[in-house]
Length: 343
Image (spheres, rainbow, N blue to C red):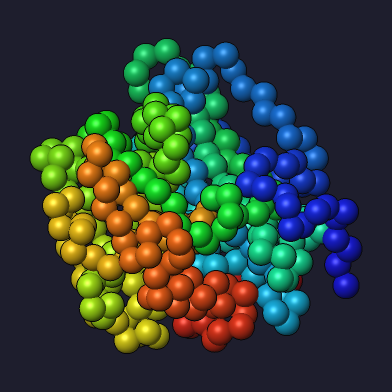
């Protein structure tokens, strides 16, 4: 029987909270060294470290849950390991091996079991693996030394109010350049989105809708989540297809759930901003929020409203959310290989 930390689990918010242990591994002399668990939340690096000079860094995000039967599990972490390796390779960084990633995940979550929120609280243990260039560089080139760390923290819903409709605005900024880094999970992409996010937040919106950077005609994603749309008749799920959006693990899971568990037709294709009013529902999907219904989108004063707007999520979005979270929490049988048992 694990001993829970004394926290207000229903009101912990989505914020950093240091836990007891974190995993650390260092890359030097062409190889990853032995990883270890550390009590120290501080990181010491050279003043000329590659992360500080040229932003050589990538990260991931996933969650650990307590299921209905009391097990502690993670959702499809093998895909996080693979995506992080892809990000690292694109940034000329040494990939952290998939097997070691999963071992580090098990070690880190197990060392912090008291911070895994109890079943039914609506909260989860957020896991943030990240890697950065720690060796000194001054010329524009990859570093020779790197640090991989994995930290965890208990979190509540990403958007205040949980799975309630949010409002977005169409941004005048680009999230990523054509043929750039939009398809990898690098901190530099999120830094690029912050200016636009603050503009949206000050205007009263939860997030931006970014258009494709080439023609500014097609829907891409928000600063931190992928889109999906539901056809007017409620029978087809459509998700934008683009080489410059992040291949969301949650989106890939939703596509499977929609087609194989809910009997929907699924389409991955370019989605024009001009056709959004034809859809009955819109949602955001990603690790942090899982699914967030979108009630309305402001396109420079033109309001696009989905279903009942900000009043409540649409019926298909509700089914998707209930099914996906049911799989994660163990109340609905999971497709083979989706659940990684920790304890």
